Image (cartoon, rainbow, N blue to C red; front, side, top):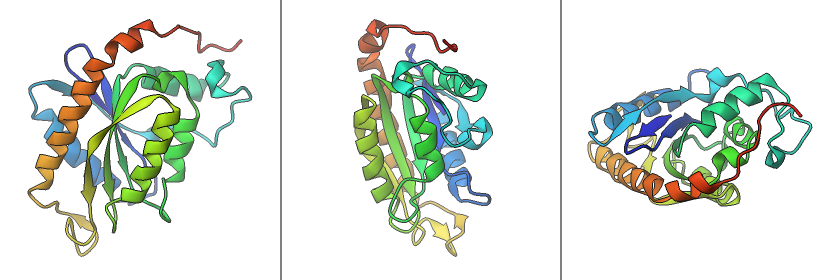
Length: 201
């Protein structure tokens, strides 16, 4: 995850938990680029480390009445950020199941924030990103136009070792420019949202 400057916070979310996946190398590369910027601070979080089971809350997330400790920890983490960069693979033309599951645990913690996207695999993860944009709309997250598409054919050596083309760094910074700008623009909406308890009712 990434935390943005100017009083805003954000997060890089690695969406695949498959052992040996290319996502960690991609996410670390984006993180290293982001750390060089003077207008933001950054934090990296892998949803694998959150140990979330398949959605097991008995009350709809929109109610904010979380009963499981893993949900409360995840809610506190997401709530602490104002912007997100999703690093996602594309599985069978869609979003990785672990990422969708992690998103579905929460609702209000996502609202009035902003998201950017880094997609990877053969088609650059574009179909997964398209699906994520629909999900973001339902969660009241603004998604920026600029995105990064990394192909197994041009950005990976022998389809395994991540070696991004030099121009991809410019795309990362363009995406981050928009994410950070929108995080600041949406701050008034976040400060007005009603508070609710994430403790068990």
